[in-house]
Length: 219
Image (cartoon, rainbow, N blue to C red; front, side, top):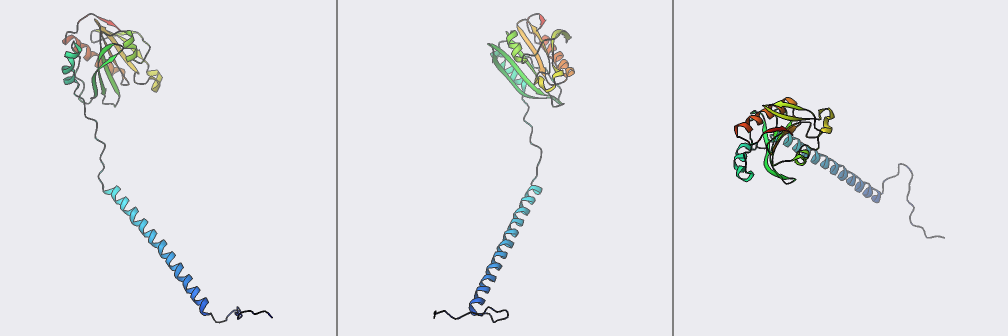
């Protein structure tokens, strides 16, 4: 005969043994702890989300400060000794902002460059190439094809019009260029032709006022 242990009655409705009771109670405690941990985690997440939302809503958010305008007229006066000739710095509308002004060296040519953001948030710049040449002008205007000529401010200017290319024209959608003696003047950007012509007229008046030497010719 086999030596088997005491048989446990598994019939329905039988009394629960002490071991079964202990296991049931342990399992119940485990499930309560698991549910409590889930509730605690959910509450913590809710608090964190509430804090983030409060910070986003309550912290003041203004528009980013605009880059300070460059005082191109003062820089022009300061740079003239280095350039060796008058540097043109005509007055522009108060709603325009100069964002760059500097002497540059390109293709062996010293040039005075000023870039503006217009009231329509368009780019308009001019370069004064001292002892300039066609290579310098071609590089300055990003190889834009030359068109006909026009009279602006008493000077004859070459027209470079690529507005039909849309964004393909880059930063030289419309440009005007002229030459006074050995100095090349170029006005270019994405601003309207009317704004470019108005600025070219101011540049021509400034050239006359500052006695820029030489006879003008379309560039």
